[in-house]
Length: 435
Image (cartoon, rainbow, N blue to C red; front, side):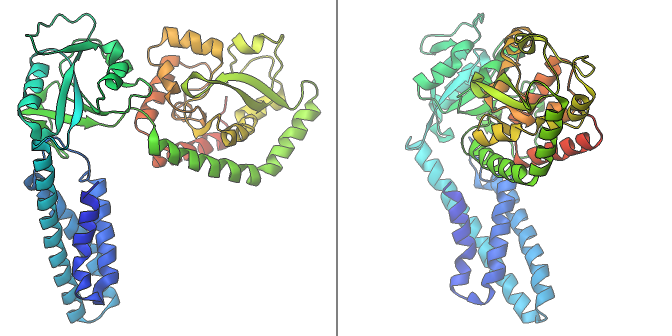
């Protein structure tokens, strides 16, 4: 992340000569850096070129300068003041572009001398994979050290000597750790997409993932295209909610659950009294569920139904019109009030606010065997609500569809996506579309 501080220093350097415009310049610098971040101008690239970045850099700085300049013009009637501010912005833009030339050159030189490089595994064994391996060996400016190939177990590619096959796709996670690999490039592997997704979604696979588009001759040039030699590559988001992203999500969970428990305490008390008045079985219902990375935990809910025997709750699929659910239980389930005690599960760390809904061990085993991708839901903590639920996949709905929605959520997570799911959850509850 050398580029970001260099950009800030370069943008604010003119303020040292004249501090008359420091407020406007500070806002313009922060806005520019924000636009750079949103536009992907701080993402790592294989082919580095200042000229490739120039249009994006210049255009975003002009937008930031124009936005701040309008505010400056409104607050200051003096034409001289506005002119001085714009001159200082022009100097800052030139300084940022010069700084980018320097940082890009430094990185390219460091790569060529192999002072900065990352281990790379190429997934595939056809002509594209072989060509990629040749390019990485010959041109160190891409910053990658070729470690070897990983191919499908049934692959029949023939490689000349010196082109190592590290193992098959099922061993990708272990091979990444064994050869200290940081980057995986998926090229022309010949295997079903489900097998490839399962390997890429493997828990703990903390790598940068790049893909060679299959129709690379017609590859879209929208966004910031990248390439190795003449082969286009696309960096995909890491298919896991890990590291700092998981820490941010956990912090927001604690804040949400603690606040909700305090604010909703009167409703929780009323639900407890109503359940108690219903008679028998106690207020709370505890059930074993499968959580993050397959770890079991005890989920807590308000009791809404009575199983006929202790084992029934673990192996019987419950649906909305189950005869064991009384009027009070049906109301609580329809409004999702029975789920509120799970705020305690969230505070304990068993669950998250938004995530795949937890299921019982019996059904987890059954669904994992029947539906590819179902077990991958457990890459992240299970949730009080989820994208599948607000998309209408509750009760007796296809498990395969739920798994697809849950995996989509995991691989496209953001705080804004969580907020959208929560808003839609509230709307579903107000409409009475619970289970």
